[in-house]
Image (cartoon, rainbow, N blue to C red):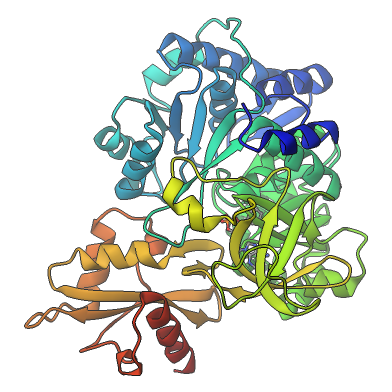
Length: 531
Ligand code: OOB
């Protein structure tokens, strides 16, 4: 059954966007075409396509033998290690549905993913970056926990391969996480067919060929390094993916030199750090042809420095886990590459720029060409609804199925989009998305907090940081440090802990008659910007 209206689905099939291939079947064809070529490189492992295929077959059989059935959701929280790839393909072959958690997520988020998706298992690591992931997963899990590196996982990985039925290519392949703007991250159902279309086209648009080497610098479960063109785009092209354990310039440059990396993707603050480090590195970065920059706005000044500093071509990417991905093209005129965030992948990506003042503007409320408006989109790889979120879907999508991205854009005649701002209640902290309401809810769980409003403040390095305005209950005087510690101890990703906390008697702008949190946030954000 399709997650799109049947008529639309038929059109996407007829156009050749949806080809009826699953990820499991893709890996089989890749193994046939590229058996001995390197597929995945980790710190101390190097797997050719044939080995990745074999490992995924064994894991699939192991998962099935351990009761993981077709359609079962399984939370995957793995860092950039080769086992991420074998586990995810193993789950796909078993017909299971990975739920992609980031390594930064902590117990409150993990618990939410497990509950929302009704996951029957968690696959994780032991210690990673000073945190005991295995312990956290065991506290949170409602089903099994498999820990890469522990004997139980090794047993799974050694299971005799067996024939397993291929799942429905139009069914849910995995659940990706939304950056979110309301309470907690929503789950995004992506199908084999829709995602593979975006992967194939991304690989082509980014010029990947089998001789390419992709460096996954960002956490690979995120949509950007996963598929734009990312790990999956590289695999699709028969190219190798090098998994960087950390994204810093020292690590990345070492790997670029050692592995002959030709292409990578980073968020703007990292691009800035790499640009700076390039000036004094002794590493040979000459293999690097293309650097994708996206996840947050890459300003023109930074955009201009990237090519000369790193000796590569800049490609801007503006995407979202919900679907739509825009790229500047490798043969675009320089001005477009430096000043826009690209144009959509597909000729059938429908883009509407609508009245920015109405959060519920429908798809016919379009602004004049060239004017700033809110971006709506619909297309062959953009979801029509979040998973199990009927109520939220009523406002997140228009009546005719356009996704309300919450981004403010201007469209050029060429179809290129310039992202100029945001209408959603989200802080983009250097590419990491923080939903204002989620952090406010954590703050308001503190007994000394009466109310809280979280807003973005400009930051030279990250683009934006979070600032929480907090009104204490009478007689209480919680300090900023205590509140930050409190939020952290509730078990949230470190990037969600407010950077700044201002404890105030009342919201400095309530006098202006703010009635909704939305208006309050807007007024506070304006105030914070002025300071
Ligand atoms: C990527 O995906 P998400 O789901 O973490 O975040 C999506 C949001 C967009 O709606 C937009 O607000 C922002 O991130 N964004 C950008 C941007 N790229 C993403 N804002 C300004 N300029 C850009 N270039 O972030 C993502 C997914 C696939 C590829 C690349 C990024």
